[in-house]
Amino acid sequence: MPGYAILVYGDEAGGFSSYSPSLPGVVAAASTYDECATLMREAVAFHLEGLREAGDPVPEPDVVGAEVVVVAA
Image (cartoon, rainbow, N blue to C red; front, side):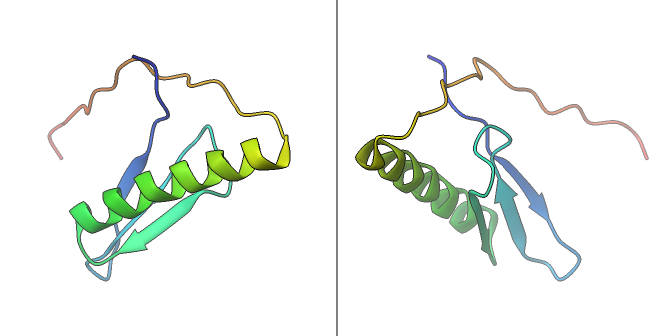
């Protein structure tokens, strides 16, 4: 089922931040990975709801899968 990618990154202070490449300006930050991912899912849903309510175009979901590639440092 297609969806929107969210990317979550750890920061130097020990927290996490996230964004969606398909939805510019939709971001979240939190002190834990799980909290950041949850906030981002909520932010995406809120953003899409706002677009629909305003009658603005909603970007089509564009991700059908994702992988994380781990390489030796």
